[in-house]
Image 1 (cartoon, rainbow, N blue to C red):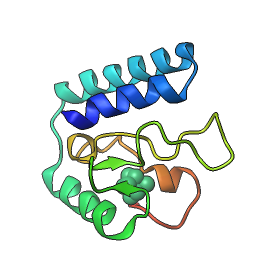
Image 2 (image 1 turned 60 degrees about the vertical axis):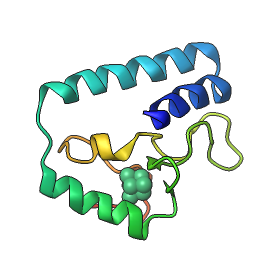
Image 3 (image 1 turned 180 degrees about the horizontal axis):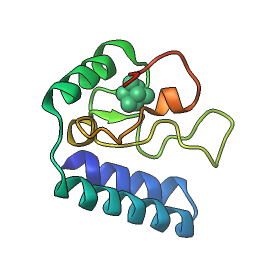
Length: 110
Ligand code: SF4
C-alpha cells in the first residue's frame, strides 16, 4: 500500500498536473479492471522472479517497476519503469513488461 501512495506522490512531483491526473486515472482504471478478473498465480510468480532476479529497474524497497517519480535519463517526459506495484499486477496476462516494451533484451517475455 505504501508503494501505491509513493507512485501517486511520484507522479505528481515528476509530471505536470494534467499528465499526473491522467496517469493516476489510467492506473485507477487498470486496477479496477484487474480486480474484476483473476490473476494467473503461476504466471505471476514466474514474472515476479524475473523482476526480482534479473531486472535492474526493479525497486526492491517498494517492489515497483522502476522508482515512482523517477524519469528516464535526460527525459522529463518518459518515466523510468511503469511504476506499478508489481505483486499486484504481474499475474494479469494483459500486463506487459516495461523493459520489453522499450525494446530491451531484459524482462519477462510472456
Ligand atoms: S521492466 Fe519488466 S522485468 Fe523489469 S521490473 Fe519492470 S516489469 Fe519487471
